[in-house]
Image (cartoon, rainbow, N blue to C red; front, side, top):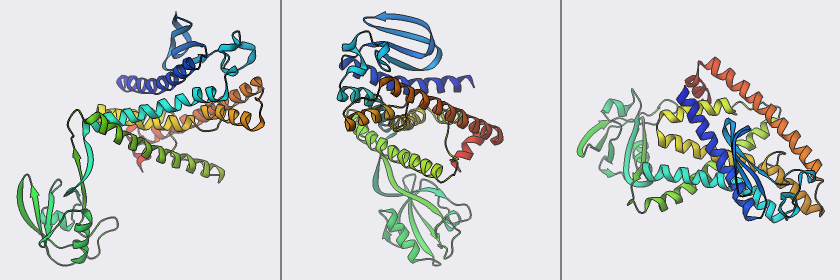
Length: 366
């Protein structure tokens, strides 16, 4: 359990610190005074001032924060030329979006590492058996996982569509399969079912013509980044669709069931860690995409909420009174905390009723 807690804290800290580092770099480039860059959450335990910025270690050992001069109200400004509120719209926009950008970049980096070490998936002309259903014609014939189906009744099989087409055309008839197993060719006989059970095919196998390709080591970082970017876009689409469904359910009066809070994320992180470092890095990438999109939402206290006020400023040609904006963000933060507490309570209930982390994972996957 201690290892799981430490893993969760490290993952959470990486996600937040990378996000805050984006704000930090963009603010420095824009000439904004960064008063403090903190690891963990206050109260402060240790702090050292380097240049004009205090770098601190705080009591709660997860996440971090960046405190910008003049970030919230005019009253706290002592150096107007270095205040966030006094910077132009484009500069403030870049500073706000930098956190989202860094989380998306972290996701790409994480997925790139996974692809570089676990291989690049690509289509081949080998149709692999990846699952055999017990009691199916494939099972009866002696077909095994990892077999490669080379031909059926003399027809060469080079794609999933080839196999499905031949099998469907021969339902209820005996077919002869030529397979490659451990480098040796074998022949098997099967009779595809005319009326297979729901969710199963006539032969009773799951197949794939995707193989893992390991490019030369010097090429892997470049190819990994390409596929990492595609993976980040893929997960971003899924996350956006999920958020859209959540809001749709809320407006319809339906309480979302599959939303995970800190406890749920802890359980999922623990599960990912059990499958090894690459699995944990992949999960880190998925979480980073989630954090990027969540922060971009136009809700007070989130980065997207600050972007919304810049948009209002652009439309009406004047800033919202900083004190009012700060109050709106404070209320938004209170609402977010209440929502997190509610989701956390729901997660704890699922953990208790599910009999622990394994039961919680099963309930999520159903």
